[in-house]
Length: 43
Image (cartoon, rainbow, N blue to C red; front, side, top):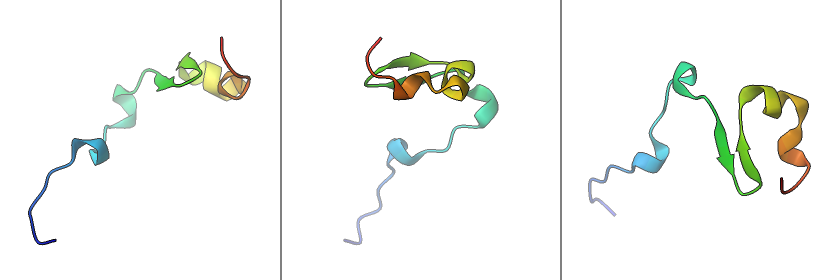
């Protein structure tokens, strides 16, 4: 369609402002992601 739309779901957040990722398996900081904890299932 030709309708102008702003979709904040695709907004870009600077990496320095990201302190954690919220996934269906929990909330993970960068250290937990580096250790692969997000791959181990529910906490």
